[in-house]
Length: 565
Ligand code: ATP
Ligand code: MG
Image 1 (cartoon, rainbow, N blue to C red):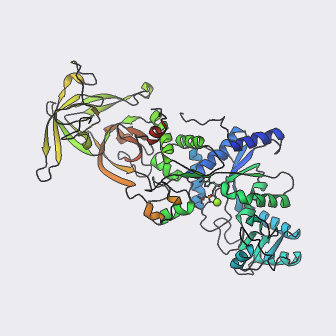
Image 2 (image 1 turned 45 degrees about the vertical axis):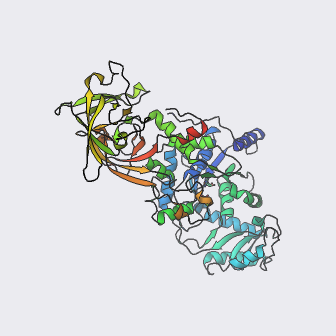
Image 3 (image 1 turned 135 degrees about the vertical axis):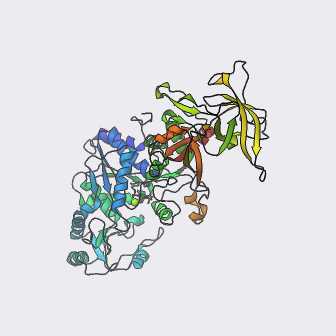
C-alpha cells in the first residue's frame, strides 16, 4: 500500500483527547461515532468525518460506532442505509458489531422526555409553528413565554401521552424544553423536542406518530452508546449548550462531550445533501454514483482510490474555521496514488490511421512494454505491432509550430516502446480537406533502441495496431460546475453546471490486452491520464473506461509540490 495514513497525526481534536486521557475525564476511554442520516449517499465531506471519527478510534485504540441518525422519517430509506455501509467499508473502515439506529432508541428517548416533563423541565405547547417563531424573538430581542408554559406536570404528561396515541392532528401540539426565553442563545429559548408527524418510518413503520427533534435525539443517542467525544460540524456550535443542558438534566454518570470542527467545502462542486438529491432527482447526473458526483460512490465509480481519499482527508486536516478546499488537491492525491500503482497501457482516443509503407503487410511483431517505467517488479507485457497503426489525431500537424514535439511533414518520431517512423505523405478527404491517413516509413534499426547514427527525433507518441486494436467507449469527465464556489452563488445552481462535464468518445482504440480489464481496474493510458474500467458498464472483453484524472497536475504546478510519479 502506498497511501500516507499517518497514525501520528495531530490536530485540535486530538489535543483535546490527549488532554482528556491525561486527566482521566472520560475514564480513559475514547468512543466516537459516525452518525449519518440515511437520506442520501455519503459525500467527500462525510468521508472527512468518517476518517476523523474512525481514525481517532483506531489511533487511541478506542471504538467508533456507526449510527444511522434516522429520527426524521422523510427521505430516509434502506437503500441509503446500505449505501452508507458499503461506502464506509470501501473507504477502509470497520464498525465491527457496532451498527446502531437512533430509531431503535425511540422508546428510550420518549421515556427521557417523560422524565423531563416530570421534573417540570418540559411542557406541551399548543402554539402554531408560526406563533412559536414569533414568540422566539430575535438575536437582539428576547423571546416571550408561551401561554402554555405553565401547564401542570399532570396536564403535560396527559397531553404528551395522547400526542403519542394519535389523538391530535399534525402540528396541533409540540413538546418543548423549558429553559429560558430570554437566553442570548436563541437555541436555548424553549426548543421544540417532539413534534407530531404522520409519516411512516422505513424501520418503525406506523409505530410512531411523534418524532424527537435532532437536538434531543442526538445527545441522548450519544449517551445511550456511551460516546466520549461527539464530533460534529461547526454549525452545531450554538447547539452545544443545549446538548449539555439535556445530558445534564437526564444523564447520570458519564456524559459525552461535543466538539465541533469545520466542514469540508470543495471547489467546483457542492456538498449539501439537499443539492445532491436535486441533481439526482432532476436527472442532471445519471445517479448517486455518477462519476461526476462528489459522493463516495461516484468517486469510486470514477476510479478514485480509498487510499487517495484518505490521504486527501489527512492532508486537509481539521480546523475550527470554514474554508474552501481546492479540488485540485484531491485530484493531486489521486494522481499521486495512481502514479505509483496503475499499470501503463496504450490507448488512442481520437484515432488517425498511419500506414507504414515499408513494413510487410503480413507481419506482426510483439513489442515488449514495461507496465511501469520506474517499477520493474510490475513486469512487462507484449503489445502487437503491424503495418497499420492508430495514433492520436492531435499527434500530427500539417503545419506545426517549432516547439511541437510530435509528427508532421519532414518529421521523425518514436513510437513508444517501438520503432522510429518518418513522415512520407498524407491523404486528405477532398470534400472537407480533413486528413484521413498518414503514410510513414520505419527504421528497422530502432526497435526500442536509439538510432545508430545518434540522430534526434521530434518526440515520442503512443499508438495501437489497427489489426489488433480493441474498440472501447471512453468517458471523459470534467468538473461538475463551471464556477469555483457554486454553493456560495446566488444563481440557480443548475445554471452553473458545466455543460462539458461529460464527453463520451467512441470508438477509441486500446491495446488488445485490455480486453481482460475487469470492472474497477485502473490504468495509466500513456500521455493521456488515468482511466478506470467502469464498474457497471464493463462487460467481459468489452471495457468502458472512465477518465479518472488527466496527467496535468494543476496543484503541483501551483504549489511547486512534486508528485511521486
Ligand atoms: P448535508 O449538510 O450535506 O446535508 P448532513 O450534516 O445533514 O449533511 P449527516 O448525514 O447528518 O449529513 O452527516 C453525518 C455526519 O457527517 C455529521 O456528523 C456531519 O457533521 C458530517 N458531515 C456532513 N457534511 C460534512 C462536511 N461537508 N464536512 C465534514 N463533515 C460533514
Ligand atoms: Mg444532519
